[in-house]
Each structure stands twice: as structure tokens, then as C-alpha cells.
Image (tube, rainbow, N blue to C red):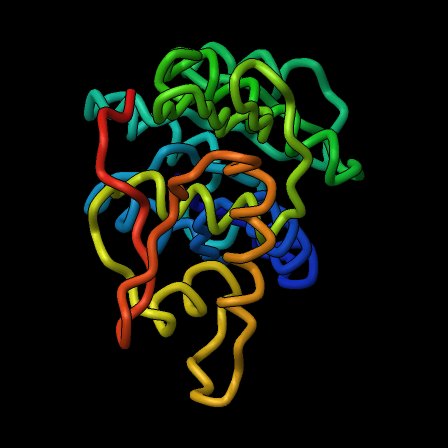
Length: 226
């Protein structure tokens, strides 16, 4: 899911972006209200984390104009102010939630997950393949109804592959998406992570969900994914 973070405090923006990326969100960070409004109008996002006090257009102005354009992208307002009037105004203009500075990253993550679940529908956040289920909001994975514990990289790898069953991804593509780094021909980090993931989701099954394509990379076995 793609999230736009609009925050003029660069250290805070970096902190928010890193925290969201660690939970497998794709993040775009901007520091100026005018730039953010132009991008939000031009490209689709699943959610916007929007500071109210910004250079250029302020957050409430951005929100008001997006809603005037019938843009229903979920918006979580971020504010350093404590006045109830500002929060009420934001909600009146169409904000889905708000969070006041300072805040804990865990709180923001929960609010993001809650808003996405509420606006997109819980059923859209669960991917299934046979008896394997992957909840993108709660990050819960189960096989045959039995919960599985995955490391963050394992979950990100599984999500990346299961979203496109049958499609072959190169090791370079997997590294760039899951690890956020360029491909080093000498590393086997992808292969190691795949083996660990297989050992958890395949258990004693004869056929693995994740197949290797010699000389290319990996793919999730094509089947009905709901």
C-alpha cells in the first residue's frame, strides 16, 4: 500500500517514513504543501499522513481542496496544537483521523491500519492461497487455521510474492523491494530468506508455495488467490 507523508520537520518525516516502511508500506515523503497537493491530485495513494502546519498550502487547505475534487483518499492529520477547534475543523473537512505531536510510532501504525481497514474493508486486506491466509493489516499469517510467526522480512517477502501469483521476480527485484537495496551478485540473502519462509509456510507439504526459477528468481505458485 502506498502512503504519502507530508511533514516539514525533516527528522520527523524520516522517522515516520522509516517506521511505515518497516511495516511493509511504500512511502513517499514531501515537506511542502504545494508539492504534496500537486502529487496527491496526480497520483493515487492509499492514505496520506498530513501535517497541518506546512510551508505553502497548509494541511487543512490541502484536505479541503482534495475533498472538493471528490478525492476520497484517507487522511490522517498530524498537528502540534492541542486546540479542539483545529481537530474538529479537520474532521469536518473530511479527515479520517488525527494524531497530535509528540506521538509514538506504534500509535501512528495502529491508526494507519485502522483507517485503512475501515475505508477499504477488512476483506480486501486478507490474501488467501488454499489454506494459507495473509492479513496485510494485522500482519497475521496462518496455515490451515494455525498461526505462523514470521520475521518482518519474511512477511514482506511473502506479501510481495503472493500479490502476483505466477509472476517470476528476479533476486534483484526482490532485494530492491523487500530490503530496499541494489543487487549484489555475491549475496545469498534472498535465497536464505526464501528457505526460512518455506520452512514456516510449507510445513510438511510436498509442494512449496514458492517455486524457484533456475537462473532467474522466485515466484508464488499460481492458484486461486482471494
